[in-house]
Image 1 (cartoon, rainbow, N blue to C red):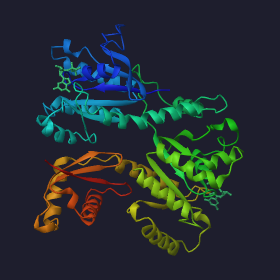
Image 2 (image 1 turned 180 degrees about the vertical axis):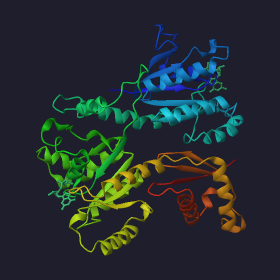
Image 3 (image 1 turned 45 degrees about the horizontal axis):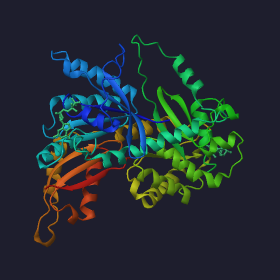
Image 4 (image 1 turned 135 degrees about the vertical axis):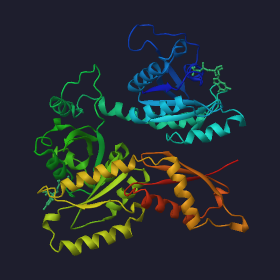
Length: 467
Ligand code: GDP
Ligand code: GDP
């Protein structure tokens, strides 16, 4: 299974030039069937050892009237729907235009995975445009020159994990014995829905949640409780793949895809060494997830294994919720909770501010709070702070605590923008970024977390020199 990359952007930014480079030959408009793909051309791309399908939105130049914007919008949405990942190109020489902003907005809403490229970046005339591109809120732009073949290495680095993910998926879904889970779930989920009037109903993307924790923490009990019945985990057809197990559920009106691992497998009577499995399995689940629920057993919380997986979730940039299970059998709940919170702060300082909720998977108590915590964590993980507000905030922070002046030279922090979400990542343009002490970095990160209410999500802050 290979993936599909859509190249999108306004006319003249260099999409076709790049398309031709990736496809390796001058392709004329190949697809003139009427209908869906009329304005989209498709080719088989090679980049290093990667092979994938690339779609380019061509044909826009013909539209000279004021229907252009509408057409671009429709075309882009269509390309995004067809693609697994989008490469959004701007012209760094022209800088960010209002049309680019419109594209960025579409992509932020519609696409799970966007790579931003500032094209025509050969030479220094493009520098300002590259910096502006950060402001689109789509992450760090690749400096690219499609015409000169620059930036393709960076594009390769961005696409490599996508390709690997798809290869893994292909492996998982290939053998017939590895039943691919949730078709039934999916149907059941759809049944309750109204048929939308539009020909292509867009279903809300399920929120991807991983439930991780040591064996016997209560993962499968929890998931069964959420499902409300024991229908799932009874047989090998219950949705078992070789490496990752996921199922789509509707939890209090929220479509979710839940990844769980060893716990479910045990129920499916697959013989495996659970102890050994749970870490590497948890790792897989974490990679697929947006929110990771670290499920602890209240009787033995914060075991080595729990700490490792929580740390991994943080390093992978996932939103984290800590749930303490089997709360039904605890007495002295107040004291216990206090001790848990202390242990949490001490043992997992990197997850500062992440929610800790107590639950009983057995009785269902606390599951509503867990749901709320997951939603909030997901929301924060996706949070975007407007550039103007950030820079006002930065000014305040600088005033309150000026940055240090190593060897008499004060580090100047000039400008700040949120370069990405999921998790939130910020870029600060400054002088002497290499001289900045880690403590000042922490001061800013903690400030961001406090002042913009972003608990439970890793926050990345990058300093970048200008010049
Ligand atoms: P599209 O409308 O987005 O498909 O853009 P094209 O690929 O047709 O390119 C538009 C114009 O930009 C053409 O004149 C290209 O030669 C030029 N162009 C494309 N890529 C680059 C680049 O990397 N650097 C420079 N300077 N010009 C480029
Ligand atoms: P997994 O290995 O993480 O999937 O754990 P299981 O869901 O198989 O649960 C392990 C054991 O803990 C089982 O005996 C469950 O009945 C028990 N258990 C799970 N959740 C709770 C809970 O909230 N309260 C109590 N008292 N027992 C629980």
